[in-house]
Length: 339
Image 1: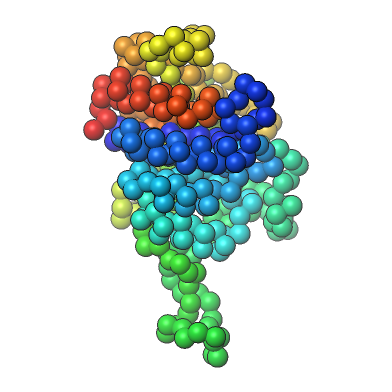
Image 2 (image 1 turned 180 degrees about the vertical axis):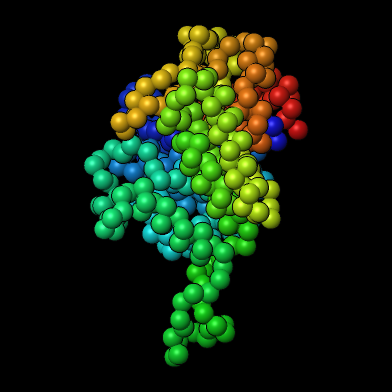
């Protein structure tokens, strides 16, 4: 395990029991948690993107703000729904945010998850072409994004421009060299992991797989990772791939931890239906540190990945989430081979 970071969904709720009650709270606390994570020695701060919800929805201002407040930690998304994105506008925003952070962005993208509203991407002006469905549209947006991030010129320059142009066709600016190799695909199945490997995107796998073969979640996810690496190798990409997995992990080191998560000690995988098909959800890891070290050592997907993203309960506030990160980094991470 080379890298450990956090993944926040950025929920906010006006409930008096929430420490994150407004959209402003969610954004500002996300930046502060990134700062705290860097101070603790963590490697990454990642944020989920959901539209039409009381969650983080506009990632690039947030990533740029976190980049301005930090100097080392990776800053990423897990994930951006490509059904909603104009890929050229996204390339501009991503390039700017990456340059502002000194090349620390790790952008997780995907075809999206169940939505708050019906066909929400249509409100953003994106409609599948004839013969396409929404998933195909997301993959087409992804294809265009990857092409423009390569930095090759494609747009014919005006012969009488307002400002002087460099020779040849023009590209999207600002261009950030290396960002193309830091695009991750949030794969929900073994097949989509292979698709990502073929196209040279890193693999981001969460606590949910949209298929079930009857084996434990971590074994199915390890199989997904193996198929991704095989597809990557067969495609002949020049650089090394990266793989992240997400886990809910809560070392119980004080009474507050036990009050919040002591009941999760008997958590198991869950199998259900999602969007009309079977899905397997990974369990929550909660327990005494020694117990968690043993359980995580048996997690085949954690062993196969280079990056572990800890899903954090952001509505419990910055201090508590920093405490969870510190507990994992202090009590668990060294035993899992971190650094």
